[in-house]
Image 1 (cartoon, helix red, strand yellow):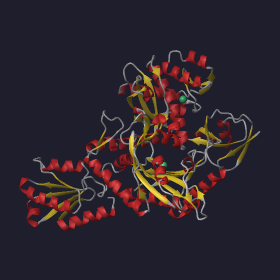
Image 2 (image 1 turned 180 degrees about the horizontal axis):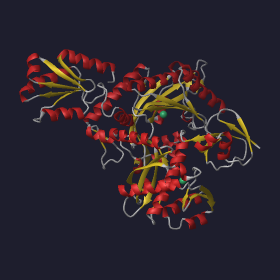
Image 3 (image 1 turned 45 degrees about the horizontal axis):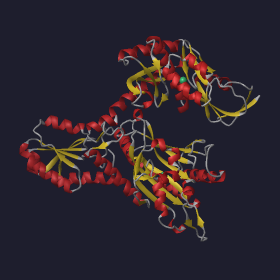
Image 4 (image 1 turned 60 degrees about the horizontal axis):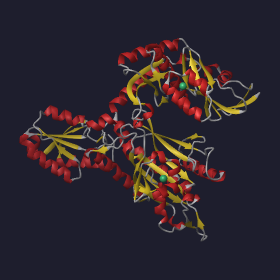
Length: 635
Ligand SMILES: [Zn+2]
Ligand SMILES: [Zn+2]
């Protein structure tokens, strides 16, 4: 018998070799029916996995993020099997679970049409009804290659695994076998509420020099009602897509000349600068200093920081005067050099040093996505140098700052604490002290958090902040990362009260994460209808006819001089058209001016959120808008 420690802290004695599924059954039939996998000693495991020794076990259901991945990954196999039935001869590439569903890449002669997707979906439902059991088996590389002889992409993958001396594992369901490490559901019956959402082109391995494949996206749920809910959310997300709105609102663009390098248009730049002004304002208030370090720095620096050894594939490099240089993927090493330009005393600490640094990181072209996944972005970085006694207070300060920012935009958020990974630098005592500092800070602030056991960086534990947007999607933005390694590598010092040299402790932290990505999130969160303080154009003046252009222009100047971002629409278009366009631009206020307004010297105000506000004196309107801007009120 072995001892299995369950999630609720209790223990269960089971026969050695019992599978995860069998233990789930022993706990309760209800749990067994919902089980999609397990977490054995923190590792995701297949339901078929036998438990050979004492361990901890958590049964995963679709409710768990890891459980969803097992479910969706199984759905991708069902998709591939359906394609095999309907389109014999198709070559199979890969089919992972992703956020919100799954995809599978196929090498097909002509891309799948909408009608094809409907047929495939119907076939998937048939396969689900058949409740085909999934069976796992392993082969030697040579046998594996024989089995996949007519599947060139699988052969390439087998070759790679074989190179690592691994056995090759497969999953088989009915007449379909796929190269796969799992884990998977026990059979196909659960994957019945399924929807194929789209098909697009995708390069094999995201590499534009390789074959163009047809990627079919889909999602699946254990219940039809959950699928419906999800599809409604997708529909809403489509309307809010920042790439679509970014174009309509003339905020930014992406051009072939700069793949993954966004261009900001004048209105987008107003948005970006307004956010940056706000960032500076709150950081100044919180006692931060600001620096700016170079974008290109020498190879020796990146070797010292460890990036050249561990991160080089993601870095762009160049040669200057026959020496290697790299374009910074992170601001930290530059920040370390700035710290070292002067000697420091304990009286200087904590030092909070911020940098809005433009960083470049190589992403595969297939992974790029609007502003959300780019190759260059502005990180709202800061490094805090402190004594270990200051950890807790500094963490509290950063949490408060992050809270202030997310609350302003109306984002609820969740905090995750990632603890010491197996492969780590520094002593267990250092880790414990740092981790406790994080925990105590959150407890003293009364914040709830979940723990990601063993998921910290190798140089220290971290807190991740996942914000929830207006339609319930979560985005990881803020992080607070304790670093016990970088100060060591760069031999950072301060003179203590005892007159001796000491190593400071360091935090890396971001609030927005990437300014550009945060803008993408804001566009989708507000569906382009930004709060007045953030709106690129705050007021649109629409004169009824040319007769009132002078009055409109005079108003425009007046508002402009009051610091309000205002535009006039002086085109010879119909009124209805101009009003509709201002509405589509989601401008917070529209002033319609004609005979009455001109003779009375006032304005007729239409508010985006409150509708017609009627006539108002220019002064009253200006005061109202200025107050909205000053308080950063959301409407
Ligand atoms: Zn698989
Ligand atoms: Zn850093």
